[in-house]
Structure formats: structure tokens, C-alpha cells
Image 1 (tube, helix red, strand yellow):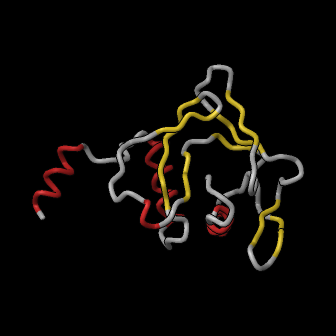
Image 2 (cartoon, rainbow, N blue to C red):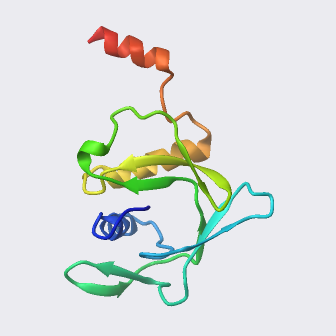
Length: 141
């Protein structure tokens, strides 16, 4: 998850951890690509490992994983900047193309949307309906 300070990264991470996810790091990670340049991994810097900032409470320990393969880049944006039906997009991280979405982190559905998007990506299911299906759906309204 990426976004400027105050954009909701820690808030969304906290809700994901509360639902059973493991945190790699809050605020900063180190990215490395495998030798084949097909996978990019996020690793927690030692000083941040196991900690999350909970606004209004402080910096607390959280369930963590030492690293994770990055399967999806999530840019945290304002509600009006989230496209309803986005086109497929990817970002280059450490030389590897990684699928990308924009999400408003404060939506109640944000953790579920991320889990569904990641599930679709890891299963190989298409994220988006074909353009012809969208046109027919929009035309039927």
C-alpha cells in the first residue's frame, strides 16, 4: 500500500491485521527482486519490524511476517479518485511489473476488496470484465 502521510495506510493495515493478515512493516519496506526479475519481495527494516502506528493510541506490536511477495500495488487515494471499473494497470517495482489498483482506504469494504483482488490475482481469475461485457451492461441501463 502506498500513499502520503495521513492517507490511511496504517488504518487499513490495522483492519487487515485485525481480520487475520500479517504485517510486514508499517511506513516503510525494503524491496528486492528475485534473480529472474519475476517476483518482488517486501522486507521489514529491523527498526520497524513487528510495530504498527495506531493513531491516537501509539506505536504497538502487531502480528507480522518477516517478508512477503508483492502481488498487488495499492495506491491509497481520495474516494472520488477511485474509478468504478478501472482498466488493468501495473507499476514497475524493483524492475518487476506488478498489478496496480487505486482504493479509498476508509471504505468499510476496503479490506474485503483487497482480499478479493488478491484472491483473483493469485488464482489467475480475470480482475475486470471484457470491454464488450461492460458496454452491454451499460447499454442495458
